Image (cartoon, rainbow, N blue to C red; front, side, top):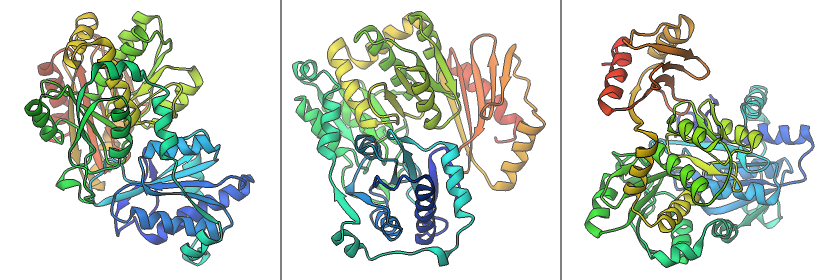
Length: 471
């Protein structure tokens, strides 16, 4: 079964993540490329450190080669944003990363990119799924990998320097050099070490790295930068007297942040910090784009700037599309993914880490103080989150209740409106909100609630949980 969700195709290794399924994806995309007559450009392929990622990149490359579609293979563990950058830089029509991003270690997957270095739209992934439905194993042709390389059908490339230089050209190197920050980097056993460490060292930061060995089990933890998984980083930042700790997820498109006191900076606040910095200190103008489960502090900040804040469904392809449509300055999501105008139209944890380093250097205050200044000006926006894994039968039951019958609990608060754009989102008249939606990358129900206090956010979240009999 091959289904593309909000973050591409992801599946458990050995179940749906199989060689045959990967070859079918390549064959389907090859057929689409030929139908569109765009075989003049190579498909850019890269991979992360997950189990089978390197072999999977070869399996998929060999199908393209057999279909006479040229391949440029980034033949080392590469950050997903680097692969996206290369698609943009080469003017390629398509690219792909072999990764399951922040999913558990038993998963792997494929992200598809299109012109400009952006996530494929639903229209594109629907086309791939439809093409796959017409294919069988007997349709797959492959060539020998070594022969394809020798014959020039598959070309190994190393665009790392160009990607690093592109980020260095976007940041204030002199300001960072002057500050001489001490930074602890946690790649979470993923692929950001070389790129982000090189950028920070070039800016004369003092950089130490943890969790950088190749471990396909990610040290036994989820390779997602959140408050739970970054506890060790938090402890070490305090013990070592670092100015900040920076973490990236498994494929380096998401970022996590620890301040000098060891406090975890929520991804919502990372977006708020950067929008504030870009507008107020760098003087850049423009709107902000956030997904439906991301802080409304951005709305209030945008209003104060005389700018707009656009709300879109979950999935970075919606953010990048809206950014391109509106010329927005920054776009992001509450899970740590963001991008800034002038870079790639996809999330990039490496660039985000470099830009946050610049921000601390220019403003000259610790992260916690900058954030306190912002909250004093715009108020408190506190989020409560709840995740629940479930089987398909239970998911079907809740989908019927929430999205067909459209039942909602009594929250004991005045409701302004309810949106079903992506899940069920309730907007309260006091400015708070709660959303219940199913993950597009895992078999999971997620509830996010934002209020002005943690107590109230947790309370409203529990109302929804109790109503759905989740606790």
